[in-house]
Length: 103
Image 1 (cartoon, rainbow, N blue to C red):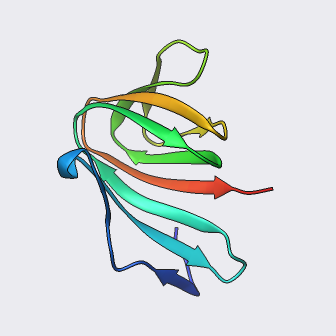
Image 2 (image 1 turned 90 degrees about the vertical axis):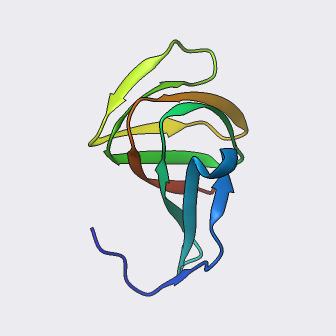
């Protein structure tokens, strides 16, 4: 997939001592995505907006609010509800693209 006519943030989003890194991209219509990498480990993240997480490569487990752990092997996609916390167990390097859905 190729994105055109975007603005890319020079500053990386760095979480968990660099185990999760991403760069934000913004489209002409104001929509936003992040492109990133996650290294093996266990993490808890927050989502303000509803998000669609597209896993390009890698393997992880995700626990969304009020759900059980679910295995995700790329290529695959899962959605995260707005205003929620979710947990990840990343088993191998994960290359991902997160799309933020604003209403």
